[in-house]
Length: 429
Image: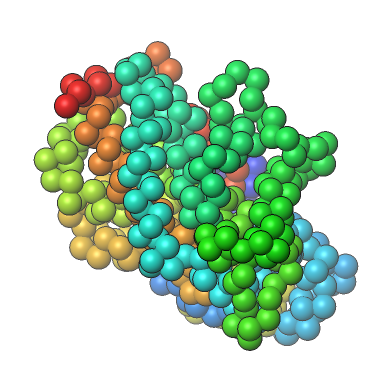
């Protein structure tokens, strides 16, 4: 591996396959480390990342998605650039989405989202998840082999969110088609609302579906979940415009699918490599939640999250100048030996197993965390019940000792591109 002083986190292909030696290098040098050649301050320590997450007044989320590539029309100079950030943030990519907002805008939009993700709604959704897991497995479990991400994790995660938002089950196939997850030949992208503009906005078709749902439910309330979504108000009692509600819905699709699908793929990879753990979890299904937590810690779906320093400050004892992009490496923090003993080891008996930051911290902590945990628990239990002797495909991943895996070529997220597994179908009961 190249020296941390020269390696390009944003383009080096070696970091796609395995970023953890690089993370260890950074942390060993300093948990808060200026990387002058990248124009960022890298934060790889657990406590230090938590410090940034909890200080929304000092660290803006305006660049959370684009990191150091956020371009302001004026230089960010001086010891306090807060006014410039507020003035020009509307010119940055993704500025209209909750993930890049700061209070009070973020507080208002998140409150709208949390009107949907209530304990009552999550309980209702979990009842659907149990049915969905078996329905999805029915499509391929008798085959004894599949590419697991496309066959299970992607459609499963997408339909869980669809149900949470109240999408009628008769429309679920249309959503599978829209996301390119249909099993029918030639169905990819063939929703009746597809247009050429969707080549630029991959969720454009979903925006239109939800706009129609919201407009219809406001005109004709039906007492269903979509009506609750359409009539949800901000904390001050005002009714959001349709566009704001649609963004909330499609944000859940984008964020919810990514986290859950990647988490489940990492979980199945580990199970396929460790038959004894399969047996342990089949015998003790109550341990599956701890297994999910450790999967999230060891293979955090978020590789890098960003903030922008609004004023000159310190993280730990390191000075950070106003206007500096702060790169928070969640996957590094979740392997910080100051927080986790033997951090590279997978251990479902680990003390403090839920203290990882796979879902972030502070006001931007992932609101779908409880949903992802429920998805994981149900999916793993049903998979282990219906698939025995789960193993990796030697044909696709190579033999033991020489395994090969492909990961998504992005510096934002950490996740397998494909996972080919084989199994023995469980006897019918």
